[in-house]
Length: 143
Image 1 (cartoon, helix red, strand yellow):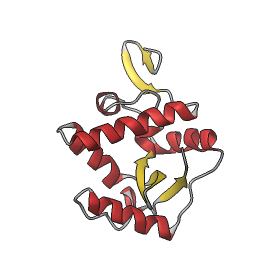
Image 2: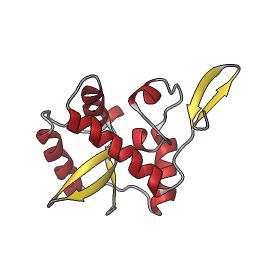
Image 3: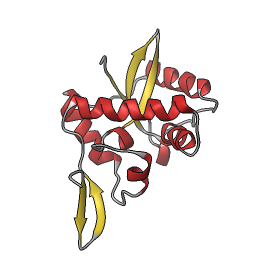
Image 4: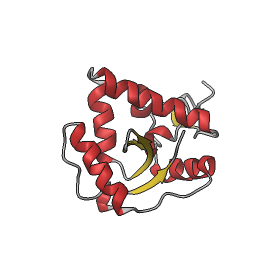
C-alpha cells in the first residue's frame, strides 16, 4: 500500500511519480488498455484521452501518441486505482511530470493537430478544447 495514502481507514489519494521509469510504466499500461481493446479498460483509456488537458506526447513512426497527465502522473496507476482515487488532480500530476521531465507543458498548435489526428485513429472526434474549456498543453518526450 505504499502508493496510497490512508487516513482513518479511508483512501484519500495516491503518490505521484518520481522518476522516468514510473512514468513509462503508466504509459505502457495505457497502451495495453488501448491495444487490448477489451472493455472496460479500453473505454476507460479512450475517455482519459478524450477528456485530457495536459498530455505527454511521444513521437512514434512519424506521428505521436498522447498520454493524459492525470493518469500517468500517479505512481503505479491502473483503472481501478484511478477510479478509486478521490483526490486525483491534474495540477498535482502536472507538477510531478514537469519535475521528472525537467520542463513544463506548453500549448502547441502542431501538437494539437497531431492530438486531433490521434483521436480520430482511436475512433472519436477530439473536443475543441480540454475539459473545463481549457486549452490543451503538451510535453514532448523521446523515451
